[in-house]
Image: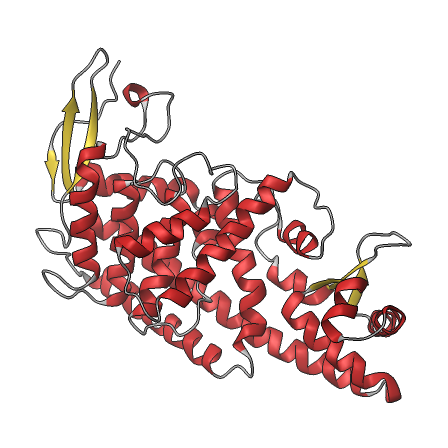
Length: 392
């Protein structure tokens, strides 16, 4: 039985029957932008304005942060965990932070390594954007880091696939979706690269990022890691074109909580050419996620100020305690050993300072052990984990 995709053309591409013992249809995406052009009805215009306002608010808040790096460290890790969970890892934010404190996480090490690869790929991409435009070369670089040494390390890291892949099902013949055959990948990616660079026409950045994500998912150019890399392209494009100064906007939680709708809207682009439906879903996500990030940033700033004020009342020990507080803003979870090393103080001093912060009520010991204890900045970690519970 073949996959029952009609062999018809749409504005987003065409379905081509592949010969063999069990014939199947694969999708060949048409170059962007769509023809006919996107129809900006009242709904889509309203959603675009709403998403743009939310993005502007987030960028304004993050550019006025005393130190954006404080939020970036943990925010990037939250996104890495969520994006990797979509692909099936069991790692949680706490597992990742524990692993970075050289403690054993509660899940297989490979799960945590996959998440750390995502962190490294994101950070590499942001750094490279300063000297290199978004290109096939950069995409391959990021992919090589994404799959380095993890469970996908045998799936040709940094190389476009040379065999057919598919989504859902056990073979192309019963798959939910079959992307283009290998020989069509480079032409499709070449056209996508031109679209990213404003050819044949310029597209508003926010709309461009959404369309590029969907098109990349349809091309599915790698054997593994397509979803994670496709999600990274959205903040990369927004940063490259100046719509966002810091990568604090991540769609993985939105896509994960609406997983069925996410896949359905992507598939309707392919089967019905419904770009407007996809963009409505995507723009709604941008607005929701950007507003959540802005609210979180504002709450965290208030939290940090309250706790710094409480530390000021500690008297002679407040100096080291304030430095420990600054470290907690970056790391959220700390072992005594790591705190001692990072602050350049003795183990007993680090231990005593953590005890003082614990007495103030916002630092908790999370292992229950007498030795090798780990402390968390509890209200910060709780705030970051909002919406993540029960998702993996």
